[in-house]
Amino acid sequence: MASLSSIGSSGLQAAQLRLDASANNVANMNTPGYRRQAVAQQAMADSAGVRATVQRQQEADGVALEKEAVEQMSATYAFKANLQTIKTQDEMMGSLLDVKA
Image (cartoon, rainbow, N blue to C red; front, side, top):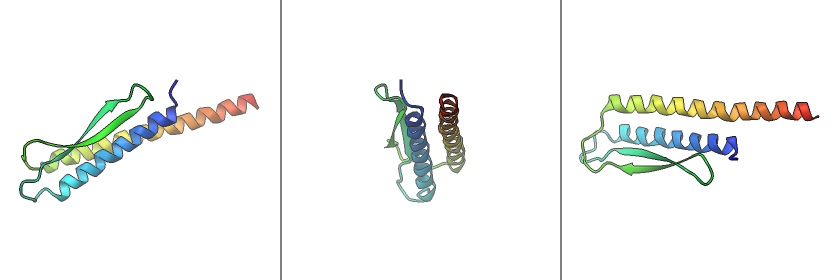
């Protein structure tokens, strides 16, 4: 069984990578020929959690500010959800130690 903390921690890292990529897109939105960064996530079957990688879009369509705002909000919610997972696991471990002691 995979550790909840490792699942939550990989989710935190993926959400942070999404925020970083989106911030980079916003910073470079006026750069001519800039290709938008996107984060691809895939499940890790061997150790649970997710693996996130930054990829460049093939075409240089430019950056839509409203799309980046939604991406940043979504990544923030993902960050909070994974943080809650780690917090809940810590509370469960504390309760288990209280019962055993």
